Length: 221
Image 1 (cartoon, rainbow, N blue to C red):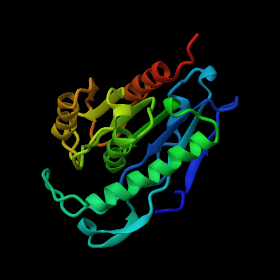
Image 2 (image 1 turned 120 degrees about the horizontal axis):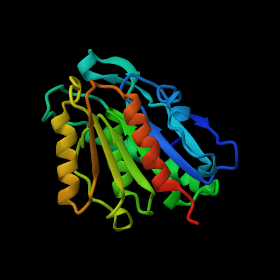
Image 3 (image 1 turned 45 degrees about the vertical axis):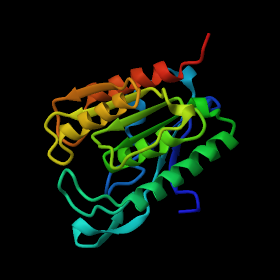
Image 4 (image 1 turned 120 degrees about the vertical axis):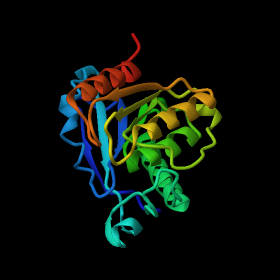
């Protein structure tokens, strides 16, 4: 994954001064969360560029080796499953490359947020927490921490928002809670929100995310 990932990009009406890099779930695409942007109701003065990368097409073991968009291989479906750690790290490296691209385009690292849903969220944990430059925040949705991560000093107190559905049959909520507990043990103060939904997003959650993004990215007076 040395080349930059293909992405859907949504530009603000004014020149971008912040970026959100948002990773989709297994089998989806960068278009998956594209419709969410106007629903976030962000103030126009935030001037946020949204970047929705497309995962590469790879064989997925639990789906009989079928080739589909995936950030890493899923080897088993049990909760304490064996993880394709090399795949997770390769995708995290690909996110690093997108962060570098945003910095090269004039966005300070402190105004870049990493977000991810489900499998994309597992990559987001790894990419954001270990990143060597300070980021604005980490948003994880209906996901889990796939493998241990050693946080960088720059992001040792990164603001984190975790959202999960209380009726999620794909990624049980206890995995979201476990990630929050792990972060707390590492010295973070994650904001955790549960919603009465399955493996999806809901309007209340989208509004909460919009408020959180606004708090993280609002230009200082």
